[in-house]
Image (cartoon, rainbow, N blue to C red; front, side, top):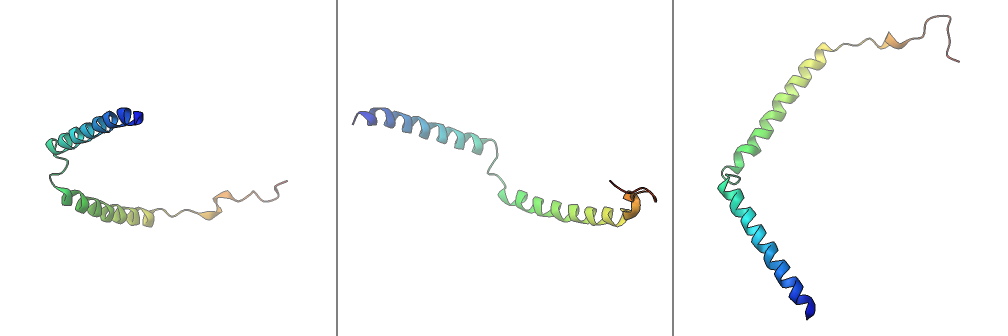
Length: 75
């Protein structure tokens, strides 16, 4: 019973903070347009993938760059 005197005020404070955060988020437009961000992230991945494929076609590396000079062997 003594623990309820501590837990009930803590729960009330927690609920008040949660409600204030929810109202703050609503007032700042966090819940205005949920679908826009979902479509935006998909569009960015498509353009990023296209840019990556384009840059990969121009990066031709020579795998012989790291050969040891002739006559010298690794010890």
